[in-house]
Structure formats: C-alpha cells, structure tokens
Length: 292
Image 1: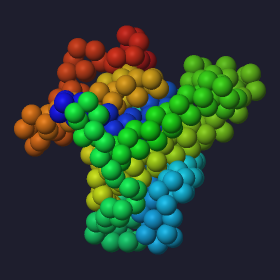
Image 2: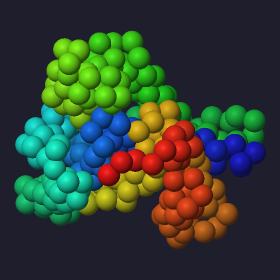
Image 3: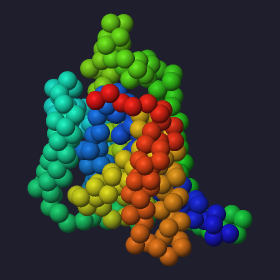
C-alpha cells in the first residue's frame, strides 16, 4: 500500500503549505495585498523554534507557541511600519514594498546570525513507524498533520465565532461600511496580519521538524509554493487556501514518487500557469473581474 503512505506524506507536506497560504489569502482578502514578505516570516518562525529548542531547551509544543507569538508580533510590526501608509497607493507601490520587506528580513537575519544553515534535532519528537493497511506511516507525519488541522480548525473558529473574525469578514466585504458601523479597521487589519503570521511561524517550526535543515533563504520557495496554493484554492478564500495547500503537497509527493523528484518544484509553477489560464479565480474563487 505504497500509495497510502505517499498520500499521508503528501497531505502532511501540503498542510505546511496550507498554513503559509492562509496568511497570503487572509491579507489579500482584507486589503488586496500580496504580502511577499510572508515567506520570510515563515523563515523567522523556523529559526525562533530552532533556538527555542536548542538554546532554551524547550520541547516541540512550547517552541511552536513561542514562534507563533513572536511571528504574530513581527507581522503587526511589518503591517504598521511598511504597509499601513500604502493602503491608498497604487498596487505596484505596495508590491515593491512587499518585495523590499522580504529582502530586508532575509539579509537582516544573515547579518545577525550569518548565512550558515542549521539543523533541528532529530530526536525532538519520537518518530515511530505504524503499519496501516500495509503502509508504513511515521508518527512524525501524523503529528504534523494533527497540529496543522488543529490550527486550521482554530482559525475557522476565530473567523466565524469571534468578534475579531466577524470584524475581519466585515472589513473584507466593505471596509468603508465597516468603519461606519464602528469597526476599528486598522486594528482589524493588524489582527489579520498577526493571525496569518502566527500560522506562518507554526509552519516554520513544523517545516524544521519535517525537513530538519533550515537557512535564512528557506522562505523563498515554500513561500512561492504557498502563494501557488492560495491561487489554486482561490485567493481570498480560507477553505481554498487549505484545499490548495493539500492538493499541492499531494501532487509534489506523487511527482517525486514516480521518479521525477527534480521536477517537484517545477510542478507547483506548472500548476500555477494552468490555473491562471483555465480558471484564474481558483477552485473556490468567484469568477468576477477585480477592479484595478
């Protein structure tokens, strides 16, 4: 049952992409900005988790929580300092600023700690093999999947059952009308960045557990793949980001399993091209043209 083993591995990988993609899609849904610095927030989360484990002697779950908190703060700082004043500017100005913030985070990290890669301890969590219908499934993959699904359920609860979530949906629908109804739009946008960045931080720690090796430029490719996942699911749609991430992870795993591992990164961008040609709104997106 090798197909089952590959499916579980693909869904575990896809859940990491989904957590990062949620940040892209939430920010775009609120202020129509593609935050290309989001992949580097993911990288910061991976390093915070690494130092929490190696220097502060924390376990996996405390390191995960610390990374989420610090990345949430970083997300708010980025929004307040870099993006807040650009809300009424042209799209190209905001896009260039996002790229600039991305490069700034990368090279400040390199300046502070150097460019050398690090490796998460292999014994951070117990990794046992389980036999399920003839397939060998690792407990690590199940842990990653369980944590990711828990965070996604928590996000759905926040969006649909809390005042912050209701405010986020109102601002996403019509920011001016939400302001007239007494909603603090600035705080709502900051909360969106905080939640999305916290999820990216969690994804960074999970990525470190899954792949072991991390480095200051590690956010570039996963960040771009998560953007592809968000577009695949329908940018601006939370269920779409989750679904897109899972699909992308399964496709990458299948591509590697059939012997084309060198093409696994290319597969994501081939999917992006196909989606933009045949269904630019994505799986859950609405077929409406956006006003520029």
